[in-house]
Image 1 (cartoon, rainbow, N blue to C red):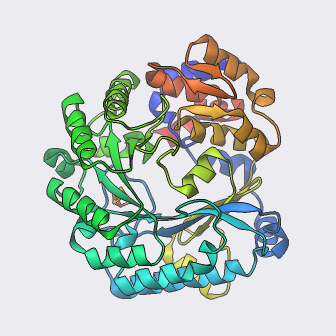
Image 2: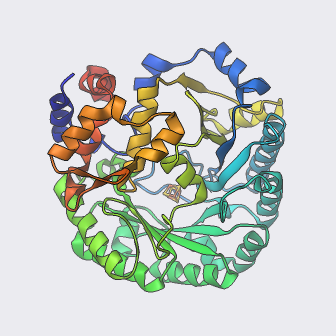
Image 3: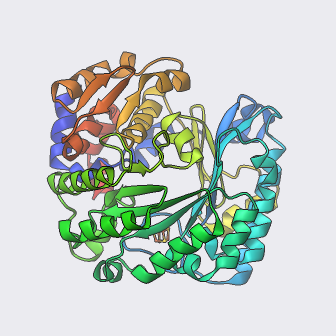
Length: 453
Ligand code: SF4
């Protein structure tokens, strides 16, 4: 199929071309679903995981105080100490069961505890969870392997909990500030203040974490250039080790916009916000290749966690623990049950890897996903693709790479294809070039259009 069809669809529906490839799980369900028996056979038998030499581990803690309007993560807003304790019990059990299936030689690239807001757990639950990760940390091969997400409200009020995390091996914390603008915070239903964000950051520094990251979101409903500049200025003044700037479509395809009766910004408006951030943060001493949304004060670091770096840049396999957590090993990609009790019951019955749905992805689908992840760092590294897939991306995506160069969106520099200055506004089109023809035809179909709506 001609790449023109990809580009024209990206121009018609740019908001469908986010980092989530493609915009609906239905695409994979209809084509690559793996039958339950073969999935169970692969996952439960020790043989399914013996090929693992290095992999990332993600632990999902779904609890949040309230749902932010833009968020489509699998979260739970119940505030019940018994539920929290039961959930952590399930996570600990799953970690034990899974550990028994791993080859002794398997190494861990990084461990992320995300959610949700993991630090909503009581101190004793945090301690239980982190201690259960001890054997996994002993397998770690990269620096600062353990990263935890937190929010301003918890981090500003609970210094003892932060000290506990630090003492149990957490090397990096990511503070979800997202915005410090009071009006925007109300609009997106985030229960926090600028002062809390400032205090939280100070508490994280006082606790002595080696790396503190701050997350910001751009393109929120009602967020213009002035508000975005204000957020950038505020966060840069704190001097975190790294700053991650999420495109707000990243989480939920603009779900928040429809809820407040607004329309997502155009690609050109996104481009302006991105250019502002890149110019401002690099002038403040943060490093990031053009196109990357991850900024680091430390020149040779990407700023993201060891888990994400292994998964998004190196294409490493990953295992997910907890309700609705995703895992990928080779061509197998699967999800734990979305309902908390279904997942918990399965683990209590001794299932190391409970599965709700599983897929066997052809290589070009895996590559397409990997390319989109890598582009969020502003480049495609040929050597890293070769290491992950056994061969480069050119044999499969040569015409797409040529088209991107002809358009002036990518340029070859040594072993990388790098995004060119000013190309961020063309990101939906650039991404579309790497969609498989099957995915584009599905998006053009009735079913695909319905899922994108
Ligand atoms: S954005 Fe973070 S804090 Fe907000 S609902 Fe989603 S996971 Fe919870």
